[in-house]
Image 1 (cartoon, protein in one colour):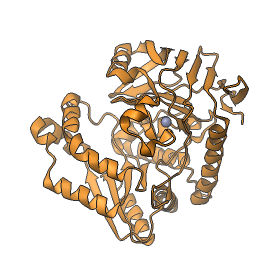
Image 2 (tube, helix red, strand yellow; image 1 turned 90 degrees about the vertical axis):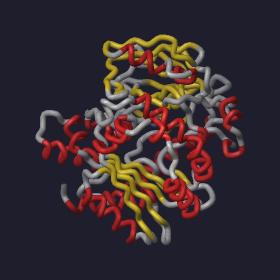
Image 3 (cartoon, protein in one colour; image 1 turned 90 degrees about the horizontal axis):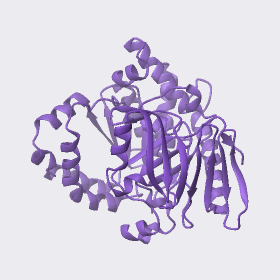
Image 4 (cartoon, protein in one colour; image 1 turned 180 degrees about the vertical axis):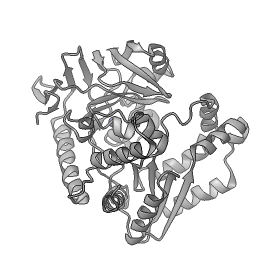
Length: 410
Ligand code: ZN
């Protein structure tokens, strides 16, 4: 890939994604796939005034060995070294960057039950840190191509060509072209997303009605205290504007738990636990997924919605134009950062606390009582189509066309 384009991408991540400020620490998590790019990003962080950049490399085959050979007890341990690292994070509040290049099937062949039990056992130690740091630091997830990932997306190409093509698509979707100023383009993009959030937050729709010729005929209730978000966010306290996802196309909220009725037909396959659920639909009654049908892997879909009580309820409603840079690639990326930004989607499972007004001063129980769903899963699935219509309905019955023929009508 052309070095000047990669340079612009690194600048976009550091200036617009993290928005690194003078004197801050930066923590980068990444794989071994693109070390030169990690070096470019590291240098950009220092140029932006970072005090210290720490890179934590990982290599999936080694992570897999840890999961396979270590006992549950060993994996569950929260060590003194980890504690010291978390204490330092609390003290320094570093920016956190994750450069994702993971093989979508990288963990196949590991005992997922053992991993989730170890995570559950460690959670009580990590939870107080997470809560103390929540919304206070700048973070960003962006992607770089890994060999296995590229091969999965472009199985017909050689390793080298697949990686090059994945780079090309990652950069295009992130609005990094050879002839533009991506940081500037993202400022405009963020303004557009913010305008749309404002539109929803002012109109206070009580429900959204979806219709498409593929059979989707569905209504979802919105929370009267809910708010829409999208694009950049601002840290609590330090008030620094940053972009947690590059790319990001969605305007989203958490719907009112218990209010969703009708049929939604998925428009893209869903990659779940390393398998593809294809040509599927979900029927809702009183907010709950009561019936699922899939041409492929229906049993997996059934298992997914019965993981726990909240797994059959919705946690997210996201609106994205059908004519979006990601959807226009026509590629299934097998990676949520890209696939969820390709088209209108819903997510089953956990909702977002920050989509509820006043959540900062509420307990977890109060937040759930106010209609934000809770679950151990949060799985996005795509429902946007070229002819999709979405109408917002207000409390007094006023109807506003929000999407027409798959794209924004507002
Ligand atoms: Zn989403």
